[in-house]
Image (cartoon, rainbow, N blue to C red; front, side, top):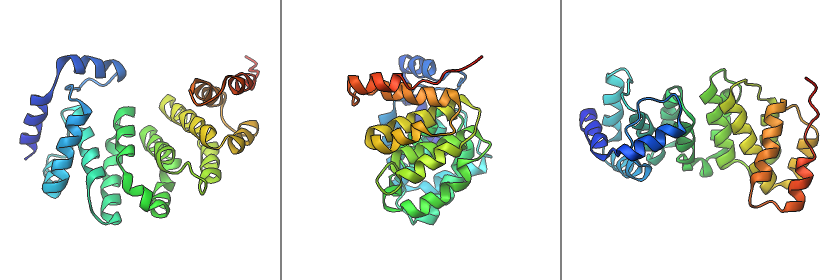
Length: 235
């Protein structure tokens, strides 16, 4: 089955799209150039028909994926599974160590829509990932909060989590900044209080301000105020 999937991916590859995708993912050298809608269509088909056999085949070859799209496809299949939550969480746990770039991470997270109906269980599942040493395990947990937990019930908990994350990687810091900007857009008063009293490192703090000011949902007056909140950094 895996060989057949790989053949399908190869047949869907586009050289121009490969170049475009590669330009967004420096350091990722195994990109075919398959457009996301085509990957999603294939993932839906696998999830509906024979996802168990699909993953058994993958595991039998020691989880070695030749192409970026093969990893992306696995994450999408998990998102389309119609199974009990424990089964889905088991496959998520299996998949997280395979994430090695922001694109796979963020596409995987947005596909886990079952989270909306299972926020409590998924929140508990995310706990160890908030403070993992692995860059993309942490980014996974942050983007999950961004996608599914910036709401009235969780906003205070979410901000507390961001304040405790202490990871040096650029892609973790950028994810936190991105998430804080969404918090501000949805809950400006609470998030402003947080921005005035937090433990963010300077880079993440200033990127958070930048992301807020880049939003089209923020008025000019507010943007000017946010820009004035920059820290004075003594070098």
